[in-house]
Image (cartoon, rainbow, N blue to C red; front, top):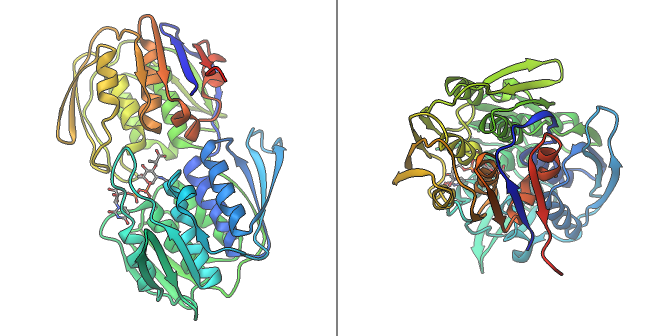
Length: 429
Ligand code: EPZ
């Protein structure tokens, strides 16, 4: 397995291009199942998870063309053409689904398009049990007959789905996305109450509308979808990745650097920018994106993760790394997932002073971390260790970086281009 070698102490300066969002691209790819015409997606990031979703869609019968890098809008993302002329297989097998939980996103589209789907239960992951009960209940309310057998979700709606009012007891991102896609081809109107409001959901809604769907309330927590008989070809560019942008903003901050994040959108990062501002980080809009600098010391600030537009759980680990070297104390509370502090023991190995009580961590800032061999455990925990390594004294070896490759495109290249001393160490064959 590859690892990353980081020698800390370099301030980042320069420009970083923000890629298309992983968590927007995944549902957008699944959207191709809803039509027999071509869906063309631009600004698709080069990520392991994207390849996994492409493999999954391919075994359903979707033909997928990856056309080189896109130059039109200045992005480096790929243009991907998907065409689900005929869906030849309605089963999403365990060996693919277990690799990536987001595979659950084929459930809604398959039932809506084919009247049946057999999708392996995704199972949990490092950060939590990750149930999908809300997805299943919503599909049942749309008229699907759903049974759980042999570890699979078997959903049938031979006469098609029927619009309904879906009230989610808690905001669920992929739950909202599955229902949106299913409702787009249902008979009649579906209302989603307490819909998640992440920008990736609005991006999916905009793509569905381009494909001929009728969706009102985009961006709000109440979505109204009027089902259509069919959807048609469309072209859509994946929205910039706000989590990648937030990650690199914290990389600039922790190294007291000065970096321009090309393509980053402040409107998707208000809660993050506000908190970083309180911690002493300057964030300003530029014509090309956001400039992040941290000329002076960092101050400890308290944070609680919340559904959008609150502080995103996907930036919690990165914020914790930053707070490890801030002046004073910081209380970080994780309210979304039950086990998202896997980075804590690894940060402690680097000298961090962190005490955990249930879902809260008290961080007492220290002047400097020290480099050490550390272990990546999940996508966002991994990148928080990379940030810590950028600021640490000495060398950090980050192991099992396949976690990083799931969600960060060319991380070491983007950081090295801004002066970081970071390199990928390929495991001997
Ligand atoms: C999405 O996961 C993201 N993944 C996650 O990003 C992100 O952390 C999460 O939303 C929260 O923002 C993708 O978009 C592919 P949820 P998702 O359903 O949809 C509970 C990353 O690092 N819940 O919004 O699976 C659940 O346990 C990944 O890029 C149920 O109880 O998350 C959690 O406590 C990690 N039953 C809460 O809701 C359900 O049926 C929010 O989960 C569904 C969810």
